[in-house]
Amino acid sequence: MRDPVPHPALRRLRPLVGVWDMYARGADVGPVRTEFAWLEGGAFLVQRARPGPETVLPEDWRGRAPFPTSCVTGYDDTADGFTVLYADGRGVARVYRADLVDGVWRQWRTAPGFHQRFAAVVGPEGASLTGAWEFSEDGAAWRHDFDVTFRRVR
Image (cartoon, rainbow, N blue to C red; front, top):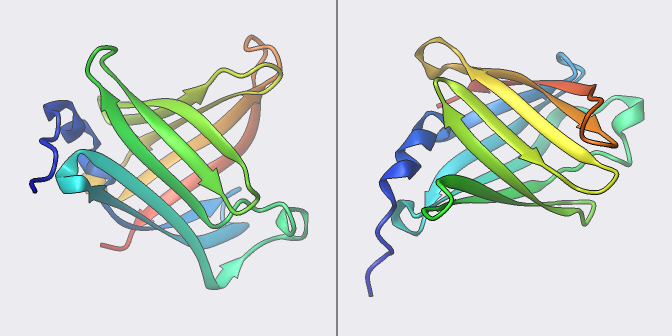
């Protein structure tokens, strides 16, 4: 049996593929080892984040940190967009829309009472991703949640 044939739009996600150390809130949280890898012959992109023994979690993140996390990203050719299925160690499961265009990776979701959006810039040579998460209760007034930096390991 053959793997599915990946849609050419998935190539836009290539800058994410690899192994990264992720830091949140500056460097207060991390490093959290994060891997982006192709699944099903490139038809999907899977992201897994797992803290290691060296991972630092500040007091206010202990007991509420989402790790481990897993995401599967696929492409919808009828909507020309990506969908991300997210699940984490707290039992949280969410669906995001996503894209990576002109060196900016974005994810967002609209949900009653808790809208979220994320944007990160792909750094020179693809060695880093730097961005932030925001949230909103009404989808109009946005507040900064936390900064995120990924540093490529390989």
